[in-house]
Length: 429
Image (cartoon, rainbow, N blue to C red; front, side, top):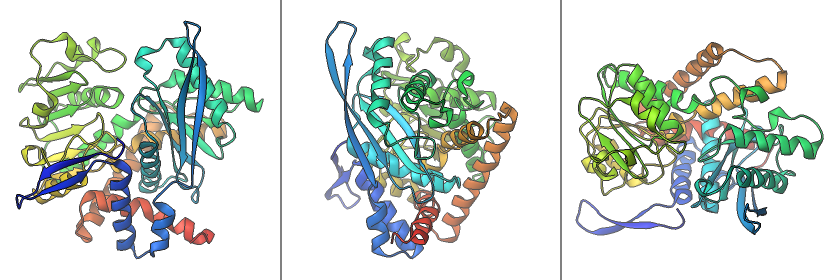
């Protein structure tokens, strides 16, 4: 994160810089997408940065009596289509550029799955793994107090993200309801079922990725049953995804967490690993025979799913990937240079803005249910999600074929179109 660059060898042997800055690489693709759609430079100028970014300072009294001040952000990318929507992450490496880039991706996701939203994103620089339950509650409530003027069920609707969960959403909803003096379940999504959460929300991102894997496998004539799958990351998305692939008859031959990776060519015992993982998705510390994340990416497999953090597939390792399909469950795991290499090698890359859109789709379902006070069964939620994801995959895939562009550029074209049109009709550009 931040303004990172890595020196990589190009095919000609000369050295060049590969940018790892999420915001810069996002802007490059958005510019190209808007040009291909026929928009003027002024549209890019509007969409290249969020309309609003709020930086807040949150004083929290820690359990030892000291007051620690945390920095937080909330970015609202574009609200031409409707209220902004997006998660809040608690992570020691949160940066303003990262939050901006993620808010743009949320706009694109909403456009791809055709939701009445623009993109938003929030983050607090902290390490929740080193904080107590009560300290996390004080931080969560303090963040809501700091951003309360900018958010709400018709303005900007937060949701869980990295290292946040339904309990944190519950505290935030309670704090917002106190400030506004009325019950506002639609202010935030990803809540516990008892507080107006939706069935299927917790597994939604992984369900959406699973549907994309199935649709991509069809295009490559791969049978998911018996397919060898490697998943980097064993947090919320990665662990549920491993379970769904295992249950579908695939062989999950590799998984990893922040401390290392596990490999078994005959398929790992996913149920056993799920039983042993901790709340942050850590499980490899329990094993002696681990491999590195670098080795994980180079395993022989049919489908590779980066479900951890950004910039994992770069020009340095893209040539060594043996999978036929790469499906991005994480945000920004593949650099632009690596995207080009994978596409040239004939590997089908399903980009993050499409593959991980299941989460925001079911968040939208939750918001709709809150607004109408009528709640759906898990079966109804899953059927609606299936419909949305299959249609969205087909739209992106067919555009990539007809316009002869890679799947990432195609997804950006589909995602940006609605937002650009809404901005044009409003007379902003």
